[in-house]
Image 1: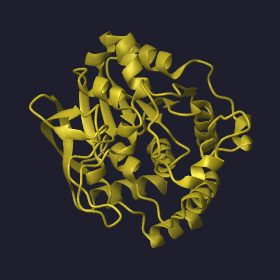
Image 2 (image 1 turned 135 degrees about the vertical axis):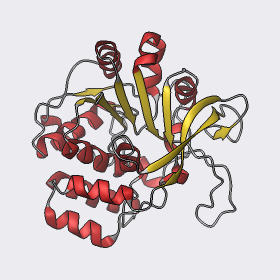
Image 3 (image 1 turned 60 degrees about the vertical axis):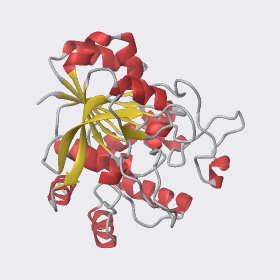
Image 4 (image 1 turned 45 degrees about the vertical axis):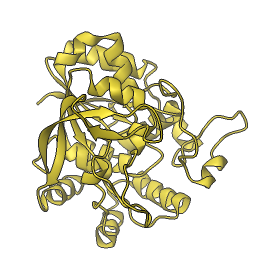
Length: 304
């Protein structure tokens, strides 16, 4: 099995934390975790805290790039996000707190770690569950790593979706919207890319019974705290496991993939949309799910 790198924007939505716990419980060859987007250092400290809480004290975590290649899109977060800036105007992800600062992270930059690891290994699997800025930067700086990597990403959306009662429309999925230029670089790089889109994961809401079971098993005390913070912050009740689906697809046949030519829209009102196009680059796209496969894989692992 190839070395694994997890690249994440943990600390905003809760599914990143579930994906990390899944990988730690899976006992895969996790070379390290890299964090990305708006205060990646705080996100890295949270990763380290989660890792230590399940006994993975030797896992190295690397903070990466805070800003996208061009600009942070406006008006993409709920109004309460305005509360998440400190007195210096620095964004603090809602699940992060000062208490996690005691967990030491590596001083090596995430992009350097990605490049060095991919160069040293015959094959590296990058599981990308945040904006693709770190990975795009690594490809730009070290194009020689492209033949040696496979990227499985949670991001994008091909189907028109009806969200919040709206008419079905093209959706700029969060991870792509936060840095469309980075996504375009990754998609067009020639790397082996597998896209697990919003349309393939939207129905993976954690049931109330499963959430209760996780709480009672006390799989990770910090995880329980993060879920509570997430629920209060967003006014939500049950997590949608977007990122764990992408992570699980690396190890089990939970999704069916097809070759499609995909491009990222960089201009206009559809900026950040992923669309099938004759001008796009061929990548693997998740088009359907194997019934029950994800649930069996995910819960058998995290209950270990």
